[in-house]
Amino acid sequence: MAYALSHQQFPTISGSGSIEAYISAANRMPMLSEAEELALARRLAEKGDIEAARALVTSHLRLVIAIARGYLGYGLPHADLIQEGNIGLMKAVKRFDPNRGVRLVSFAMHWIKAEIHEYIIKNWRLVKIATTKAQRKLFFNLRSIKASLAQQDESLPGSQRNFGTLDVDGVNMIAQRLGVKPEEVIEMETRFTGADVSLEPTSDDDEDRFSPIAYLTADSCGEPIAMLERQEFDYLQEEGLQGALASLDERSREIIQRRWLVHEEDSVATLHELATEYGVSAERIRQIEAKALQKMKGALLAAA
Image (cartoon, rainbow, N blue to C red):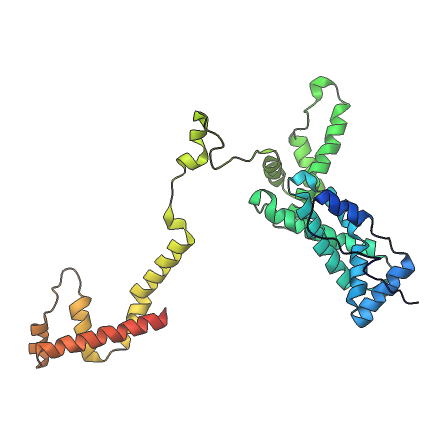
């Protein structure tokens, strides 16, 4: 049975407008029956039907919104979370196999969450804080585990409550449950509870004169451009210079070394001294020197 789905049945959601308007439009998208979903998935898999892919994606936009709503506690824009989840949904639709006997909603949840997780890890306070699988698990489960501990804490007498803070037993319990070190639990908890500090002053109060920008020293040595310049200079000083000298004939190399590359304790040879040694005029030595320098310049530029 074929399903001809038009743009009127599955209207495209515009990226312009408010997030509320987007959510409202997404929630009005028609749901697919199992038979419709299976037919569309087969059209996509067998014929590469883009219209079928669009229908599968738009009918599951409300799923992305529901999943993204669960990650609002990380302080990232809801619209960005939805956008990343939509990318995961599209990846799921592309990889969905209609012959596996599972609904797209079950298959897509993994891809949607994975894409949102990756976005949060890369952007949460601009710090990459979870690099291993165990650390990622800690990052996304610490808050929920703390919430359950807080509920248990409320049943204790007032003098025995820790009011949501993690004690030694709580840290060890979480570390054991998630397969990480207690030190990692403490560090992650510190990152969650620590407040962001503005680098620049936020007002004209005298206290803001002590913002980080006021006492952080500017070190240009650590800037990428400065580092590249130093690396290039070091190369030209060593390997590049040796290669340029090697491109010269023996007499030209000797003249350059004695005119430009002498040690501090040695004196620079004059044109007349070299002219007497080689039995030519001083003007000829100057011409050889100029030609050798030009050739070395070309060799250095080619090496760079």
